[in-house]
Length: 171
Image (cartoon, rainbow, N blue to C red):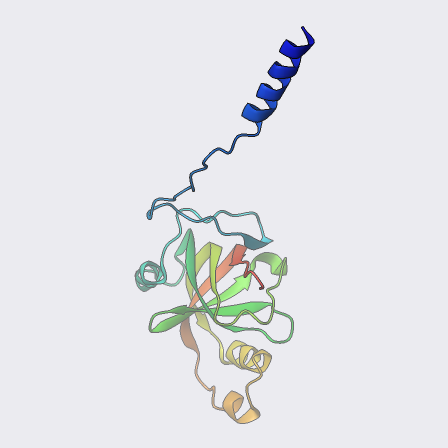
């Protein structure tokens, strides 16, 4: 009886330790890759996001006083270097001036060049000379560049209630 138990134990050990082939997981080419984001302001998602070309078309169809609530992705052209209280996003031949709802949050000052997602309210406004000069000062422009601003201008504006910045893995 002891021999039978010993043989069963050895067989259990041998079969329990056998090498199994494992298949590598392959991912289809069209499968999406999850991206981690830093979130600022309200919690938003990265679905139903317009491209900057689509956003440019939306802005072109707006008149002063019109607003659209939406999300779009674009590259950051410039950020307020005093405290990150505004940023400018690239829109092909134009740019959108982004401010943050109720100044409830601010952006990191070093994100120029990064692609981000913003959610909120798009509108067209006439920016006064004083406001243009204020933003130019915040951006670190010279006194000569600021003095050259002498006319109000129509601008694409966006009040963001949430922003997503992709996290970059440091290696």
